[in-house]
Image (cartoon, rainbow, N blue to C red):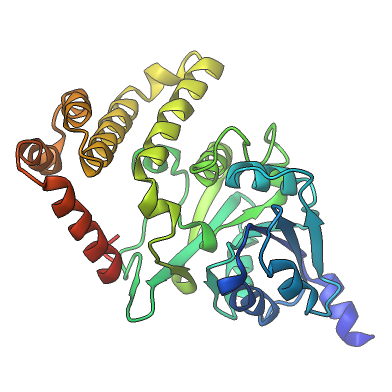
Length: 317
């Protein structure tokens, strides 16, 4: 009875996990939640119509804090998160994907930073890892804290598995995750929270992000850029002052997005498209110049794919 009273007096953290055929790493992810030193949590497990053994793995746990929801229809990642969001009832919200891991003190250490009532977002350092190597995202060079909307706009530095949000801040928004975005739904949600609250950073590693070639981050880099273009359009549509207030930031976003789309086009050996978006990016930085030269180099797409795979293996993200 005493243990239950202690747990009930502690803040409840709702953990969102969207799953579609995640059997390979799922048990490792769920175990990392169960092993948290802060024990007052609930796992909202959204099964996006998996066809593998994901449900069987989930059912093997006998824990009332694990709550299973089966999607009425299969959606993309953003849609799944948006649909599951309404089942999050905790004081704080965290997200863990099926292939990532939390360290045992993740929730406890981050909750301490919410002692400042103006803080609505807490993040930490994370380890990018694969079977052979690992590397810290910040490695001691931590991002700014406080009111950081402008900084996030052009240099998004949040890794989703480290994110924790204050529910009362999220409740002030029109909605949680936006189903219109699949690849940048977390970017959108964090930016909207950053407009009305402060961000705090725990100085240390509290999570691990698994690097593998099946990840959308590697397979579909242009999709992130294309969604960011739509995101900017959406902000301008809903806020007539947005384009003027953040004029320089929007220019930087467009340049980065066009550069990434050019890179993806060159990977597919679509050189005319690559050149088109390079001109749009105004050959931003040395990356733009390098890609321009590669547009005229035979087999450059194969060369880029080789370096992309090397980048994954070396965790140079």
